[in-house]
Image 1 (spheres, helix red, strand yellow):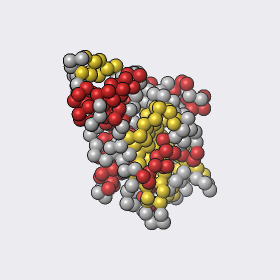
Image 2: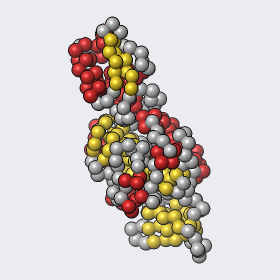
Image 3: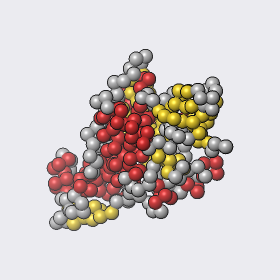
Image 4: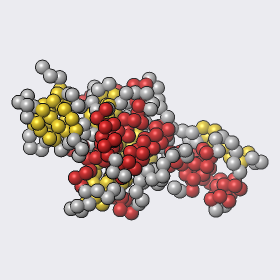
Length: 324
């Protein structure tokens, strides 16, 4: 974190009570003049900070921004989010995360207020306006590339749990979407860099329509999308949501690292919107219709066709259908 974010974190943790410029300067090993300059920069970003000659600085109001200082103040994790790279606007958090993955610590998060070139699976465009949660988590698990789908399952469970803690009954659509009332509220894009037998790093991109007006989306996305704001009838505290998401993600990732994937998979199955549905799966080579009857230990979808044949789908596009 830079000095400005460290000052913000200290002001937030002080919960509106004044903290002297001298104390901030001593704790951060900089001059009081430098403290004042960073306070002025925070005010320009929208943070309302009161100042008193005798008492010091007090944070009165926080803008709706996902800054590192705001997120880290109260974040209860030891790995995920320990370092946060923040951007007001960016092409894609996954692009930046992939570029820096080799030189940063595991658990580093890249987060942006908006994306100009957000990407979904199969190169699809992902609309990423201000008000959403657009972030990527850099992981360095010592696993074989064939186990990468487990990371997507883990991410889906963590998102669904975070959303449920705010009220909506989120469900997970195989392989990488989270739904509320059958409409997409989140997409997950997992990208890996690997040798033949070992992952070098893994980037998990998570895009959530939080305080987004889906009516502003292009028409082809409007009917199939929703947002937390729309479902709840009011805006959510995005900083609090990101903190909850990172905390849920870390709990599951540490379980995964310890080899306890069974419990994560059971959570996924219990929140699955796909199991029991009649689906159309499109892969690079074929199209398959069948009933989704389960997911195996590697995250592959198991279909039963009308002929009673079982099909194992490792990767593909899934469309829920109404059976006639």
